[in-house]
Length: 164
Length: 373
Image (cartoon, rainbow over all chains, first blue to last red; front, side):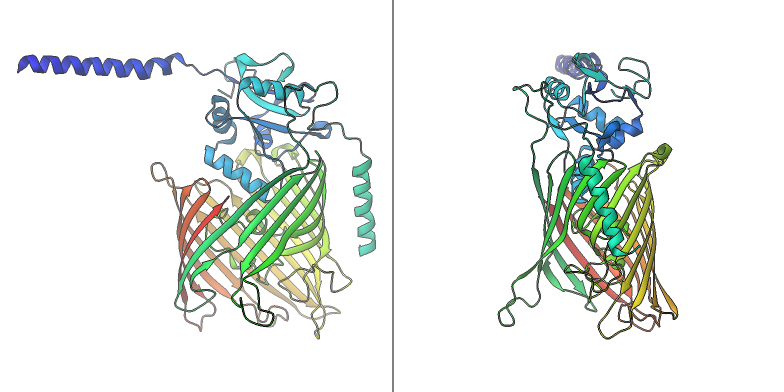
Protein backbone atom coordinates (compact mmCIF):
# COMPACT_ATOMS: atom_id res chain seq x y z
CA UNK A 1 0.00 0.00 0.00
CA UNK A 2 2.81 2.44 0.93
CA UNK A 3 4.51 1.57 -2.34
CA UNK A 4 1.32 2.61 -4.10
CA UNK A 5 1.35 6.01 -2.32
CA UNK A 6 4.97 6.58 -3.25
CA UNK A 7 4.22 5.82 -6.90
CA UNK A 8 1.12 8.05 -6.84
CA UNK A 9 3.04 10.89 -5.22
CA UNK A 10 5.82 10.55 -7.75
CA UNK A 11 3.31 10.59 -10.61
CA UNK A 12 1.63 13.68 -9.15
CA UNK A 13 4.97 15.41 -8.82
CA UNK A 14 5.80 14.52 -12.43
CA UNK A 15 2.43 15.83 -13.64
CA UNK A 16 2.83 19.04 -11.66
CA UNK A 17 6.34 19.54 -13.09
CA UNK A 18 5.10 18.84 -16.61
CA UNK A 19 2.25 21.29 -16.18
CA UNK A 20 4.59 23.91 -14.79
CA UNK A 21 7.02 23.44 -17.68
CA UNK A 22 4.29 23.23 -20.26
CA UNK A 23 2.52 26.36 -19.14
CA UNK A 24 5.01 28.55 -17.38
CA UNK A 25 8.00 28.16 -19.69
CA UNK A 26 6.39 29.49 -22.88
CA UNK A 27 4.75 32.38 -21.06
CA UNK A 28 8.00 33.25 -19.35
CA UNK A 29 9.95 33.02 -22.59
CA UNK A 30 7.46 35.09 -24.58
CA UNK A 31 8.09 38.57 -23.34
CA UNK A 32 5.80 40.22 -25.89
CA UNK A 33 7.54 42.70 -28.16
CA UNK A 34 6.45 46.32 -28.23
CA UNK A 35 3.95 47.12 -30.94
CA UNK A 36 5.11 49.87 -33.26
CA UNK A 37 2.66 52.31 -34.81
CA UNK A 38 3.82 52.80 -38.35
CA UNK A 39 2.56 55.14 -41.04
CA UNK A 40 3.22 55.67 -44.71
CA UNK A 41 6.28 57.87 -45.19
CA UNK A 42 4.11 60.70 -46.55
CA UNK A 43 2.07 61.11 -43.38
CA UNK A 44 3.07 64.50 -41.88
CA UNK A 45 3.08 63.28 -38.27
CA UNK A 46 5.94 62.08 -36.05
CA UNK A 47 4.34 61.88 -32.63
CA UNK A 48 0.85 61.12 -31.34
CA UNK A 49 -0.75 60.88 -27.96
CA UNK A 50 -2.74 57.81 -27.00
CA UNK A 51 -5.90 59.92 -27.17
CA UNK A 52 -5.10 61.05 -30.71
CA UNK A 53 -4.38 57.47 -31.70
CA UNK A 54 -7.70 56.40 -30.20
CA UNK A 55 -9.53 58.91 -32.40
CA UNK A 56 -7.88 57.34 -35.45
CA UNK A 57 -8.51 53.73 -34.44
CA UNK A 58 -12.15 54.39 -33.56
CA UNK A 59 -12.77 56.28 -36.80
CA UNK A 60 -13.37 59.64 -35.16
CA UNK A 61 -10.53 61.21 -37.12
CA UNK A 62 -10.58 60.38 -40.83
CA UNK A 63 -7.92 62.77 -42.07
CA UNK A 64 -4.30 63.54 -41.32
CA UNK A 65 -3.16 67.15 -41.45
CA UNK A 66 -3.13 68.51 -45.01
CA UNK A 67 -6.42 66.64 -45.57
CA UNK A 68 -4.69 63.32 -46.24
CA UNK A 69 -7.20 60.45 -45.84
CA UNK A 70 -6.43 57.90 -43.12
CA UNK A 71 -6.36 54.26 -44.19
CA UNK A 72 -6.53 52.15 -41.05
CA UNK A 73 -4.93 48.71 -41.10
CA UNK A 74 -5.55 46.49 -38.09
CA UNK A 75 -4.12 43.11 -37.17
CA UNK A 76 -6.17 39.94 -37.51
CA UNK A 77 -8.34 38.86 -34.60
CA UNK A 78 -6.21 37.03 -32.04
CA UNK A 79 -2.93 38.66 -33.05
CA UNK A 80 -0.71 40.29 -30.45
CA UNK A 81 -0.75 43.59 -32.35
CA UNK A 82 -4.57 43.74 -32.36
CA UNK A 83 -4.77 42.74 -28.70
CA UNK A 84 -2.35 45.54 -27.75
CA UNK A 85 -4.32 48.03 -29.83
CA UNK A 86 -7.60 47.05 -28.16
CA UNK A 87 -6.19 47.03 -24.64
CA UNK A 88 -3.86 50.01 -24.65
CA UNK A 89 -5.63 52.34 -27.08
CA UNK A 90 -9.33 51.50 -27.30
CA UNK A 91 -9.82 50.04 -23.82
CA UNK A 92 -12.30 47.68 -25.45
CA UNK A 93 -12.89 43.97 -25.82
CA UNK A 94 -12.86 42.37 -29.26
CA UNK A 95 -16.67 42.26 -29.26
CA UNK A 96 -16.95 45.91 -28.25
CA UNK A 97 -14.54 46.92 -31.00
CA UNK A 98 -16.50 45.03 -33.67
CA UNK A 99 -19.79 46.41 -32.39
CA UNK A 100 -18.32 49.92 -32.33
CA UNK A 101 -17.48 49.73 -36.03
CA UNK A 102 -20.88 48.32 -37.00
CA UNK A 103 -22.49 51.23 -35.15
CA UNK A 104 -20.00 53.69 -36.64
CA UNK A 105 -20.93 52.75 -40.18
CA UNK A 106 -24.64 52.56 -39.34
CA UNK A 107 -24.50 56.12 -38.02
CA UNK A 108 -23.12 57.15 -41.41
CA UNK A 109 -20.00 58.47 -39.67
CA UNK A 110 -17.81 56.62 -42.14
CA UNK A 111 -18.25 54.39 -45.16
CA UNK A 112 -14.95 52.59 -44.74
CA UNK A 113 -14.18 50.06 -42.06
CA UNK A 114 -10.61 49.18 -41.01
CA UNK A 115 -8.85 46.75 -43.29
CA UNK A 116 -7.87 43.56 -41.52
CA UNK A 117 -4.26 42.50 -42.05
CA UNK A 118 -3.17 38.92 -41.50
CA UNK A 119 0.57 39.22 -40.90
CA UNK A 120 3.21 41.76 -39.96
CA UNK A 121 4.73 41.41 -43.43
CA UNK A 122 1.42 42.21 -45.08
CA UNK A 123 0.94 45.22 -42.78
CA UNK A 124 4.40 46.52 -43.67
CA UNK A 125 3.83 45.99 -47.40
CA UNK A 126 0.38 47.59 -47.56
CA UNK A 127 1.27 50.48 -45.25
CA UNK A 128 4.43 51.32 -47.18
CA UNK A 129 2.49 51.53 -50.45
CA UNK A 130 -0.72 53.21 -49.35
CA UNK A 131 -0.61 56.97 -48.79
CA UNK A 132 -2.22 57.84 -45.46
CA UNK A 133 -1.94 54.29 -44.10
CA UNK A 134 -1.41 53.54 -40.44
CA UNK A 135 -0.71 50.04 -39.09
CA UNK A 136 0.34 48.22 -35.94
CA UNK A 137 3.28 45.85 -36.31
CA UNK A 138 5.76 43.96 -34.19
CA UNK A 139 8.46 46.53 -33.44
CA UNK A 140 11.18 44.10 -34.59
CA UNK A 141 9.60 43.78 -38.04
CA UNK A 142 9.22 47.38 -39.12
CA UNK A 143 10.25 47.94 -42.73
CA UNK A 144 12.66 50.67 -43.70
CA UNK A 145 10.07 52.40 -45.93
CA UNK A 146 7.80 53.18 -43.01
CA UNK A 147 7.82 55.92 -40.42
CA UNK A 148 7.56 54.74 -36.81
CA UNK A 149 5.50 57.15 -34.73
CA UNK A 150 6.43 58.17 -31.22
CA UNK A 151 3.56 57.56 -28.83
CA UNK A 152 3.40 60.12 -26.06
CA UNK A 153 7.00 60.98 -26.99
CA UNK A 154 8.37 57.45 -26.69
CA UNK A 155 9.56 55.01 -29.31
CA UNK A 156 9.18 51.21 -29.11
CA UNK A 157 11.73 49.74 -26.71
CA UNK A 158 11.87 52.82 -24.52
CA UNK A 159 10.82 52.45 -20.92
CA UNK A 160 7.19 53.46 -20.51
CA UNK A 161 6.24 52.89 -24.15
CA UNK A 162 2.47 52.46 -24.17
CA UNK A 163 1.84 49.61 -26.62
CA UNK A 164 3.03 46.12 -25.73
CA UNK B 1 -31.09 84.00 -44.08
CA UNK B 2 -33.55 83.20 -46.87
CA UNK B 3 -33.65 79.95 -48.78
CA UNK B 4 -32.03 81.24 -51.97
CA UNK B 5 -29.10 82.68 -50.03
CA UNK B 6 -28.64 79.46 -48.12
CA UNK B 7 -28.68 77.50 -51.36
CA UNK B 8 -26.12 79.90 -52.85
CA UNK B 9 -23.80 79.41 -49.87
CA UNK B 10 -24.19 75.65 -50.02
CA UNK B 11 -23.39 75.64 -53.71
CA UNK B 12 -20.28 77.74 -53.14
CA UNK B 13 -19.08 75.36 -50.43
CA UNK B 14 -19.48 72.37 -52.71
CA UNK B 15 -17.61 74.24 -55.41
CA UNK B 16 -14.75 74.88 -52.97
CA UNK B 17 -14.63 71.14 -52.38
CA UNK B 18 -14.48 70.30 -56.00
CA UNK B 19 -11.69 72.77 -56.84
CA UNK B 20 -9.57 72.10 -53.76
CA UNK B 21 -6.54 70.02 -54.74
CA UNK B 22 -6.65 66.67 -53.03
CA UNK B 23 -3.28 65.82 -51.68
CA UNK B 24 -3.88 62.20 -50.91
CA UNK B 25 -5.71 59.15 -52.00
CA UNK B 26 -6.25 55.81 -50.37
CA UNK B 27 -5.10 54.23 -53.59
CA UNK B 28 -1.39 53.78 -54.24
CA UNK B 29 0.22 56.73 -55.96
CA UNK B 30 1.82 56.19 -59.38
CA UNK B 31 5.27 54.84 -58.92
CA UNK B 32 4.40 53.36 -55.57
CA UNK B 33 2.36 50.59 -57.09
CA UNK B 34 3.36 47.03 -56.45
CA UNK B 35 1.44 44.25 -58.17
CA UNK B 36 1.92 41.99 -55.15
CA UNK B 37 -0.15 44.20 -52.87
CA UNK B 38 -3.87 44.79 -53.30
CA UNK B 39 -4.94 48.41 -52.99
CA UNK B 40 -6.25 49.30 -49.54
CA UNK B 41 -9.65 50.11 -51.02
CA UNK B 42 -11.47 49.75 -54.33
CA UNK B 43 -14.14 52.26 -55.31
CA UNK B 44 -17.05 52.13 -54.96
CA UNK B 45 -16.64 50.17 -51.75
CA UNK B 46 -20.18 48.95 -51.28
CA UNK B 47 -20.99 47.46 -47.88
CA UNK B 48 -24.39 46.36 -46.61
CA UNK B 49 -25.51 45.49 -43.09
CA UNK B 50 -28.91 44.18 -42.03
CA UNK B 51 -30.83 44.57 -38.78
CA UNK B 52 -33.99 42.77 -37.72
CA UNK B 53 -35.90 41.85 -34.60
CA UNK B 54 -38.77 39.67 -33.41
CA UNK B 55 -40.93 40.85 -30.52
CA UNK B 56 -43.48 39.66 -28.02
CA UNK B 57 -45.71 41.98 -25.98
CA UNK B 58 -48.17 41.41 -23.17
CA UNK B 59 -50.05 44.49 -21.93
CA UNK B 60 -52.98 45.10 -19.64
CA UNK B 61 -53.89 48.30 -21.49
CA UNK B 62 -53.06 48.04 -25.17
CA UNK B 63 -50.55 50.60 -26.41
CA UNK B 64 -49.46 49.07 -29.67
CA UNK B 65 -49.23 45.45 -30.69
CA UNK B 66 -49.85 42.42 -28.50
CA UNK B 67 -48.48 38.90 -28.93
CA UNK B 68 -45.69 38.21 -31.39
CA UNK B 69 -44.73 40.84 -33.93
CA UNK B 70 -42.04 41.07 -36.50
CA UNK B 71 -40.03 44.22 -36.07
CA UNK B 72 -38.54 46.33 -38.79
CA UNK B 73 -36.32 44.64 -41.33
CA UNK B 74 -33.62 47.20 -42.00
CA UNK B 75 -30.91 47.32 -44.64
CA UNK B 76 -28.09 49.82 -44.26
CA UNK B 77 -25.77 50.55 -47.13
CA UNK B 78 -22.51 52.47 -47.09
CA UNK B 79 -20.24 53.06 -50.02
CA UNK B 80 -17.14 55.19 -50.44
CA UNK B 81 -17.16 56.56 -53.99
CA UNK B 82 -13.70 58.08 -53.60
CA UNK B 83 -11.46 58.99 -50.64
CA UNK B 84 -13.63 62.07 -50.08
CA UNK B 85 -17.10 61.14 -51.21
CA UNK B 86 -19.34 58.64 -49.43
CA UNK B 87 -22.94 57.55 -49.82
CA UNK B 88 -25.20 56.08 -47.14
CA UNK B 89 -28.66 54.59 -47.38
CA UNK B 90 -31.08 53.02 -44.93
CA UNK B 91 -34.19 51.12 -46.01
CA UNK B 92 -36.80 49.80 -43.61
CA UNK B 93 -39.59 47.31 -44.15
CA UNK B 94 -42.29 47.51 -41.47
CA UNK B 95 -45.15 45.01 -41.13
CA UNK B 96 -48.60 46.54 -41.68
CA UNK B 97 -51.54 45.81 -39.44
CA UNK B 98 -53.90 46.32 -42.42
CA UNK B 99 -52.09 43.91 -44.77
CA UNK B 100 -54.45 42.31 -47.29
CA UNK B 101 -57.30 44.77 -46.74
CA UNK B 102 -58.61 47.37 -49.17
CA UNK B 103 -58.64 47.45 -52.96
CA UNK B 104 -56.02 46.92 -54.14
CA UNK B 105 -55.04 44.87 -51.11
CA UNK B 106 -52.50 46.55 -48.83
CA UNK B 107 -49.09 44.96 -48.98
CA UNK B 108 -47.63 43.12 -46.03
CA UNK B 109 -44.86 45.65 -45.45
CA UNK B 110 -44.30 49.36 -45.72
CA UNK B 111 -41.03 50.17 -47.45
CA UNK B 112 -39.39 53.44 -46.44
CA UNK B 113 -36.18 55.21 -47.39
CA UNK B 114 -35.16 56.24 -43.88
CA UNK B 115 -31.88 57.85 -44.85
CA UNK B 116 -30.18 58.66 -48.15
CA UNK B 117 -27.08 60.81 -47.79
CA UNK B 118 -24.15 61.82 -49.94
CA UNK B 119 -21.23 63.41 -48.09
CA UNK B 120 -18.19 65.31 -49.34
CA UNK B 121 -15.32 65.33 -46.87
CA UNK B 122 -12.69 68.05 -47.12
CA UNK B 123 -11.12 67.24 -43.77
CA UNK B 124 -12.24 66.39 -40.26
CA UNK B 125 -12.98 70.10 -39.86
CA UNK B 126 -15.37 70.35 -42.78
CA UNK B 127 -17.78 67.93 -44.41
CA UNK B 128 -20.86 68.74 -46.44
CA UNK B 129 -23.73 66.41 -47.07
CA UNK B 130 -27.16 66.40 -48.64
CA UNK B 131 -30.03 64.00 -48.24
CA UNK B 132 -32.58 62.61 -45.81
CA UNK B 133 -31.33 62.30 -42.26
CA UNK B 134 -32.45 61.42 -38.82
CA UNK B 135 -32.62 64.92 -37.36
CA UNK B 136 -29.35 65.47 -35.48
CA UNK B 137 -30.85 67.35 -32.55
CA UNK B 138 -31.20 64.32 -30.34
CA UNK B 139 -28.52 61.83 -29.36
CA UNK B 140 -30.63 58.66 -29.48
CA UNK B 141 -32.09 59.52 -32.86
CA UNK B 142 -28.66 59.58 -34.49
CA UNK B 143 -26.91 56.93 -32.42
CA UNK B 144 -29.21 53.97 -33.02
CA UNK B 145 -31.42 54.88 -35.99
CA UNK B 146 -33.49 51.80 -36.85
CA UNK B 147 -31.00 49.24 -35.56
CA UNK B 148 -32.75 47.80 -32.51
CA UNK B 149 -29.81 45.53 -31.82
CA UNK B 150 -27.59 48.57 -31.31
CA UNK B 151 -29.61 49.99 -28.43
CA UNK B 152 -29.47 48.37 -25.02
CA UNK B 153 -33.25 48.52 -24.50
CA UNK B 154 -36.15 47.22 -26.56
CA UNK B 155 -37.99 50.52 -26.76
CA UNK B 156 -36.81 53.96 -27.75
CA UNK B 157 -37.58 56.86 -25.44
CA UNK B 158 -41.04 58.06 -26.42
CA UNK B 159 -39.78 61.57 -27.22
CA UNK B 160 -37.96 60.08 -30.24
CA UNK B 161 -40.33 57.23 -31.01
CA UNK B 162 -40.64 56.45 -34.73
CA UNK B 163 -43.91 57.89 -35.90
CA UNK B 164 -43.91 60.13 -32.85
CA UNK B 165 -44.46 63.87 -33.01
CA UNK B 166 -42.48 65.43 -30.19
CA UNK B 167 -39.13 65.62 -31.99
CA UNK B 168 -39.10 65.81 -35.80
CA UNK B 169 -37.41 62.47 -36.49
CA UNK B 170 -36.47 63.17 -40.11
CA UNK B 171 -34.81 66.13 -41.80
CA UNK B 172 -34.42 66.60 -45.56
CA UNK B 173 -31.80 69.07 -46.69
CA UNK B 174 -28.10 69.73 -46.24
CA UNK B 175 -25.63 69.65 -43.37
CA UNK B 176 -22.24 71.26 -42.85
CA UNK B 177 -20.40 69.39 -40.13
CA UNK B 178 -17.00 68.68 -38.69
CA UNK B 179 -14.93 68.45 -35.56
CA UNK B 180 -11.88 70.23 -34.16
CA UNK B 181 -9.50 68.94 -31.47
CA UNK B 182 -9.84 72.16 -29.41
CA UNK B 183 -7.12 71.22 -26.96
CA UNK B 184 -8.55 67.79 -26.25
CA UNK B 185 -12.19 68.87 -25.95
CA UNK B 186 -12.93 67.50 -29.44
CA UNK B 187 -15.70 69.89 -30.38
CA UNK B 188 -18.05 68.67 -33.09
CA UNK B 189 -20.62 70.76 -34.91
CA UNK B 190 -23.47 70.38 -37.38
CA UNK B 191 -25.30 73.21 -39.08
CA UNK B 192 -28.23 72.34 -41.31
CA UNK B 193 -30.93 73.77 -43.49
CA UNK B 194 -33.80 71.80 -44.92
CA UNK B 195 -37.46 70.94 -44.97
CA UNK B 196 -38.99 70.82 -41.54
CA UNK B 197 -42.16 69.05 -40.54
CA UNK B 198 -44.53 68.12 -43.35
CA UNK B 199 -48.32 68.30 -43.53
CA UNK B 200 -48.32 65.37 -41.11
CA UNK B 201 -46.08 66.64 -38.32
CA UNK B 202 -44.60 63.22 -37.59
CA UNK B 203 -43.11 63.20 -41.09
CA UNK B 204 -40.49 65.32 -42.80
CA UNK B 205 -41.21 67.13 -46.03
CA UNK B 206 -39.87 64.45 -48.36
CA UNK B 207 -41.65 65.77 -51.44
CA UNK B 208 -40.91 69.42 -50.68
CA UNK B 209 -41.41 71.99 -47.96
CA UNK B 210 -45.02 72.94 -47.26
CA UNK B 211 -44.10 76.57 -46.65
CA UNK B 212 -41.43 79.02 -47.77
CA UNK B 213 -39.56 78.99 -44.47
CA UNK B 214 -36.92 76.27 -44.25
CA UNK B 215 -35.94 74.63 -40.99
CA UNK B 216 -32.53 75.41 -39.48
CA UNK B 217 -30.58 73.46 -36.94
CA UNK B 218 -27.35 73.79 -35.01
CA UNK B 219 -25.83 70.97 -33.01
CA UNK B 220 -22.65 71.24 -30.93
CA UNK B 221 -21.00 68.46 -28.96
CA UNK B 222 -17.84 67.82 -26.96
CA UNK B 223 -15.95 64.58 -26.35
CA UNK B 224 -13.15 65.49 -23.94
CA UNK B 225 -10.05 63.32 -24.03
CA UNK B 226 -9.72 63.68 -20.28
CA UNK B 227 -12.99 61.78 -19.80
CA UNK B 228 -12.91 59.13 -22.53
CA UNK B 229 -16.47 57.98 -23.18
CA UNK B 230 -18.16 61.23 -22.14
CA UNK B 231 -20.15 63.20 -24.68
CA UNK B 232 -21.98 66.45 -23.98
CA UNK B 233 -24.22 68.00 -26.60
CA UNK B 234 -26.71 70.78 -27.19
CA UNK B 235 -28.90 71.66 -30.17
CA UNK B 236 -31.29 74.27 -31.44
CA UNK B 237 -33.86 73.82 -34.21
CA UNK B 238 -36.11 76.43 -35.80
CA UNK B 239 -38.99 75.79 -38.17
CA UNK B 240 -42.41 77.02 -39.20
CA UNK B 241 -45.25 74.51 -38.91
CA UNK B 242 -48.00 74.80 -41.53
CA UNK B 243 -51.07 72.61 -41.17
CA UNK B 244 -54.10 72.72 -43.47
CA UNK B 245 -56.85 75.02 -42.21
CA UNK B 246 -54.79 76.20 -39.22
CA UNK B 247 -52.72 79.31 -38.53
CA UNK B 248 -48.95 78.99 -38.99
CA UNK B 249 -46.81 78.49 -35.93
CA UNK B 250 -43.16 79.08 -35.30
CA UNK B 251 -41.41 76.11 -33.69
CA UNK B 252 -38.26 76.35 -31.61
CA UNK B 253 -36.62 73.26 -30.14
CA UNK B 254 -33.75 73.35 -27.64
CA UNK B 255 -32.15 70.12 -26.52
CA UNK B 256 -29.23 68.96 -24.41
CA UNK B 257 -27.73 65.55 -23.75
CA UNK B 258 -25.03 63.87 -21.72
CA UNK B 259 -23.79 60.37 -22.50
CA UNK B 260 -21.28 58.14 -20.78
CA UNK B 261 -20.63 55.72 -23.60
CA UNK B 262 -19.03 52.84 -21.76
CA UNK B 263 -20.84 49.78 -20.49
CA UNK B 264 -19.78 49.84 -16.83
CA UNK B 265 -21.91 51.85 -16.52
CA UNK B 266 -23.71 53.18 -19.61
CA UNK B 267 -25.49 56.45 -18.85
CA UNK B 268 -27.68 58.48 -21.18
CA UNK B 269 -29.71 61.58 -20.33
CA UNK B 270 -31.51 63.91 -22.71
CA UNK B 271 -33.87 66.83 -22.39
CA UNK B 272 -35.85 68.70 -25.06
CA UNK B 273 -37.99 71.81 -24.87
CA UNK B 274 -40.34 72.30 -27.86
CA UNK B 275 -41.93 75.76 -28.09
CA UNK B 276 -44.71 76.93 -30.37
CA UNK B 277 -45.88 80.45 -31.06
CA UNK B 278 -48.43 81.62 -33.58
CA UNK B 279 -46.85 83.63 -36.39
CA UNK B 280 -47.66 87.29 -35.94
CA UNK B 281 -47.75 87.13 -32.18
CA UNK B 282 -49.44 85.14 -29.51
CA UNK B 283 -48.72 83.07 -26.47
CA UNK B 284 -45.68 80.82 -26.52
CA UNK B 285 -46.26 77.32 -25.21
CA UNK B 286 -43.47 75.14 -23.90
CA UNK B 287 -43.47 71.33 -23.94
CA UNK B 288 -40.76 69.52 -22.03
CA UNK B 289 -39.57 65.95 -22.38
CA UNK B 290 -36.63 64.19 -20.79
CA UNK B 291 -35.31 60.77 -19.96
CA UNK B 292 -32.41 59.26 -18.06
CA UNK B 293 -31.19 55.73 -18.68
CA UNK B 294 -28.61 53.64 -16.84
CA UNK B 295 -27.28 50.21 -17.77
CA UNK B 296 -24.47 48.08 -16.44
CA UNK B 297 -22.61 45.22 -18.11
CA UNK B 298 -22.12 42.63 -15.35
CA UNK B 299 -18.62 41.33 -14.68
CA UNK B 300 -17.14 37.99 -15.79
CA UNK B 301 -18.46 35.27 -15.75
CA UNK B 302 -21.91 36.79 -16.27
CA UNK B 303 -20.73 39.53 -18.62
CA UNK B 304 -23.34 38.62 -21.23
CA UNK B 305 -26.02 40.15 -19.00
CA UNK B 306 -26.72 43.88 -18.96
CA UNK B 307 -29.56 45.13 -16.74
CA UNK B 308 -30.98 48.57 -17.38
CA UNK B 309 -33.46 51.15 -16.17
CA UNK B 310 -34.94 54.24 -17.80
CA UNK B 311 -37.17 56.96 -16.44
CA UNK B 312 -38.89 59.26 -18.91
CA UNK B 313 -41.38 62.08 -18.81
CA UNK B 314 -43.24 64.07 -21.44
CA UNK B 315 -45.18 67.12 -20.36
CA UNK B 316 -47.46 68.76 -22.92
CA UNK B 317 -48.76 72.28 -22.30
CA UNK B 318 -52.56 72.23 -22.04
CA UNK B 319 -52.91 75.08 -24.54
CA UNK B 320 -50.33 73.91 -27.07
CA UNK B 321 -51.91 74.23 -30.54
CA UNK B 322 -49.69 71.65 -32.30
CA UNK B 323 -49.29 68.95 -29.67
CA UNK B 324 -52.90 68.89 -28.45
CA UNK B 325 -53.16 65.19 -29.32
CA UNK B 326 -49.64 64.21 -28.21
CA UNK B 327 -49.99 62.10 -25.04
CA UNK B 328 -48.24 62.98 -21.81
CA UNK B 329 -46.12 60.36 -20.14
CA UNK B 330 -44.51 59.45 -16.86
CA UNK B 331 -42.91 56.07 -17.27
CA UNK B 332 -40.30 53.63 -16.13
CA UNK B 333 -38.67 50.85 -18.11
CA UNK B 334 -36.70 48.13 -16.36
CA UNK B 335 -35.15 45.21 -18.14
CA UNK B 336 -32.15 43.13 -18.99
CA UNK B 337 -30.22 42.40 -22.16
CA UNK B 338 -28.44 39.10 -22.80
CA UNK B 339 -25.97 38.97 -25.68
CA UNK B 340 -26.28 35.54 -27.27
CA UNK B 341 -23.36 36.28 -29.59
CA UNK B 342 -21.44 39.34 -30.67
CA UNK B 343 -24.21 40.07 -33.18
CA UNK B 344 -27.47 38.96 -31.52
CA UNK B 345 -29.17 39.77 -28.24
CA UNK B 346 -32.23 38.80 -26.25
CA UNK B 347 -33.89 41.57 -24.26
CA UNK B 348 -36.82 41.59 -21.90
CA UNK B 349 -38.32 44.61 -20.16
CA UNK B 350 -41.27 45.79 -18.12
CA UNK B 351 -42.80 49.19 -18.86
CA UNK B 352 -44.87 51.02 -16.29
CA UNK B 353 -46.54 54.07 -17.78
CA UNK B 354 -49.05 56.66 -16.68
CA UNK B 355 -50.51 59.04 -19.25
CA UNK B 356 -52.31 61.27 -16.79
CA UNK B 357 -52.67 61.31 -13.00
CA UNK B 358 -56.40 60.65 -13.48
CA UNK B 359 -55.77 57.53 -15.58
CA UNK B 360 -54.68 54.07 -14.40
CA UNK B 361 -51.16 52.85 -15.09
CA UNK B 362 -50.53 50.92 -18.31
CA UNK B 363 -48.21 48.02 -17.55
CA UNK B 364 -46.60 45.75 -20.09
CA UNK B 365 -44.06 42.99 -20.43
CA UNK B 366 -41.97 42.88 -23.59
CA UNK B 367 -39.49 40.45 -25.10
CA UNK B 368 -37.25 40.89 -28.13
CA UNK B 369 -34.63 39.02 -30.12
CA UNK B 370 -32.61 41.57 -32.08
CA UNK B 371 -29.70 40.91 -34.38
CA UNK B 372 -27.48 42.28 -37.10
CA UNK B 373 -26.19 40.38 -40.09
